[in-house]
Image 1 (cartoon, helix red, strand yellow):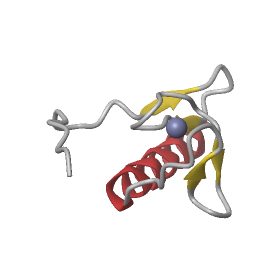
Image 2 (cartoon, helix red, strand yellow):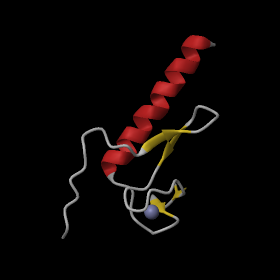
Image 3 (spheres, helix red, strand yellow):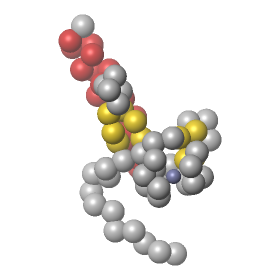
Length: 70
Ligand SMILES: [Zn+2]
């Protein structure tokens, strides 16, 4: 199995124009995920638990930011 040397703080979380976090695929870099299956629409790669956790953290952070602003 090929090991990808991923940097710390995976660059898989993007923010869309609405300010909401979006996950990007580690494999193909696209941002289309099937949230029900936790798989990339494009290449079928599974979303790693790390990426899911990061994504959730980003969502929580956004919620807290919005709560603080509102
Ligand atoms: Zn993909």
